[in-house]
Image 1 (cartoon, rainbow, N blue to C red):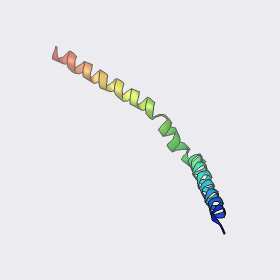
Image 2 (cartoon, helix red, strand yellow; image 1 turned 180 degrees about the vertical axis):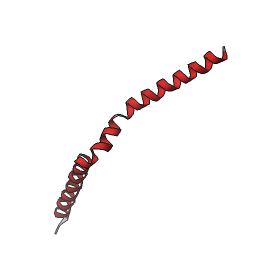
Image 3 (cartoon, rainbow, N blue to C red; image 1 turned 30 degrees about the vertical axis):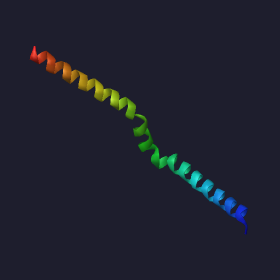
Image 4 (cartoon, one colour; image 1 turned 135 degrees about the horizontal axis):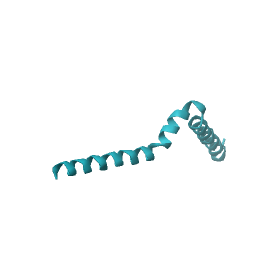
Length: 63
């Protein structure tokens, strides 16, 4: 066994790990988590809107 055989085995192991992670990330049992993560930017907009409304209410009550 020379260094090139070891490099080939290492490449094969890394490729198997990569495909395993891709399979895990896109598997059907992760769909709910992926959908929740996809909606996070929109949830932030709703939180910002509620915060702005609360701040406006506070300033209106002071006046």
